[in-house]
Image (cartoon, rainbow, N blue to C red; front, top):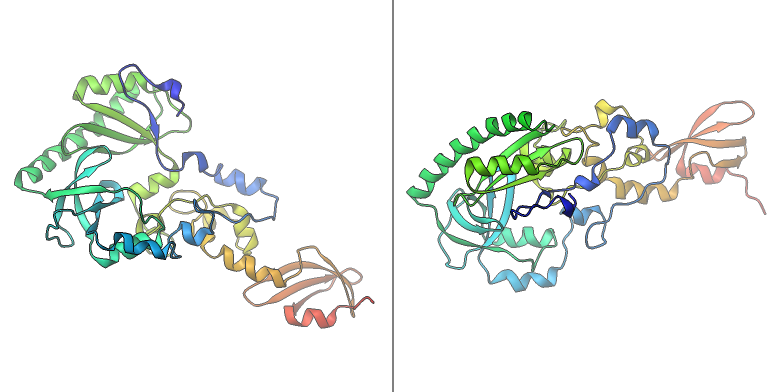
Length: 343
C-alpha cells in the first residue's frame, strides 16, 4: 500500500506476504503464456528454489553462534510461527502455552519445537543470526482466561467488520482476526481484488474497540497459508507444513515438465499454480541439457526431421520426419548415432 494512505491518527495500512508477486489470473495466464523459456527462481541469498523453500542447508559455520542459546519455535493463530529465545531457561515441552514478546506486543502461543531441532531448522532456512523475540514466561490461569475472552471478541469482530464494510461500501473479504493478548492491537487480514482505501473503516473500528486497529491486505497464497487445508496429494499444503516463504510459480515450469496445462490439474488450494511444480524444476533444467531444443531441425540417416517433444522421465525424443510425416520415438542416447555427421 502506498504511503499516501497514511493517516494523522498514527495508523498505517500495510500489506503482508507476497501480494506484489501474485500470479496473474490463472486461466488467463495459461492462455496467454507462449514463452518456453524458464527462468529459475532465486531466493533472497541468490540461490535456487531449494534454499528458498528450506531444503538446502545454508551457512553451516554460523550454527555455532546460536548453539549456546535456548531457542524455541512458537505457533500462533492462523498457522503463524516464530522463533524466540528462552533466556530464563524455563523448562518447556511441546504444547506448552507461553507468553512471548512479539513484533507487535505481548502474544500467547504454543511451543511447537524445542532443542537441537530448532537450530537445525533455522540453519536449513538460512536465517541464522536474524533477530528474535524473547520468551517471557509460561502462560498462567489469568492468561488462559484472557485468551478465552479475546476469542469471543475476535468472533464478534468478524460480524462487525463485515457490517462496517457494507456501511462504507468496501469490497473486502475477511480472512482472519487476531487480537493481542495484551489488547494493544487488533489486526484484520483480508483480501481484495485491488488496493482499498480503508481509512474511514479503520476510524470506525477504532471508535468501537478503543485500541490500535491494523488492516493487512494479503494475497491468495497467503490466504491459503493462514486458513490451511489439504492439497491434491492428500497431505497438508506445503506453505503451512514446511515452506519458509511463498514463491511465484511460472506456468512455463509446467510446460517445461510436460505437465498438462488444464487449470483443474495445475491449480492448488489457493487457486494459483501449485507450488510443488517448482520443486523439481531444477532437476528438469539439468536433465534438459542433454536433449535437443523443441522444433530443432535435425538431419538423420532416415531423413530430415524436427523435434516434436521430449520425454525427460523416459529419456526419449519424439521426431517428426518432414517427407513422410511419420513420428518416431527415439532414445536420447540413440539420437547421436542417427544423426548425419557433417564434416
